Image (cartoon, rainbow, N blue to C red; front, side, top):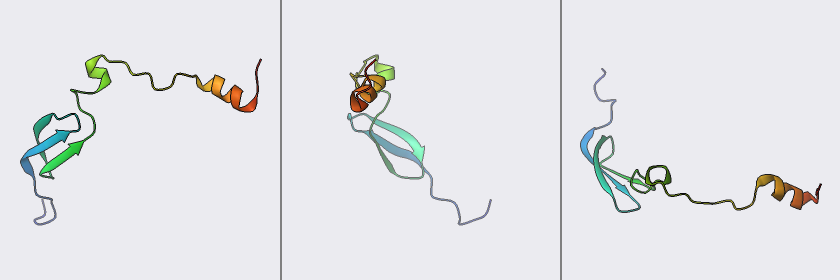
Amino acid sequence: MKQGIHPEYHPEARMVCSCGSVYTTGSTKPELRVEICNQCHPFFTGEQRIVDTEGRVERLRRRFSLSQ
């Protein structure tokens, strides 16, 4: 490996999630801030969030008045 071209590695870097969870990991940055982690992600928590209550096809038909 060439000397002087690699970033500094922090083996005890902190990863802070927006939900408040704090993890220790290795990274080239001393602190990482993330929006979602395994404690708050819907896939891991089993929580289902319905973002779109109306289907795309119905929305398109309503927009262009294409009722069948």
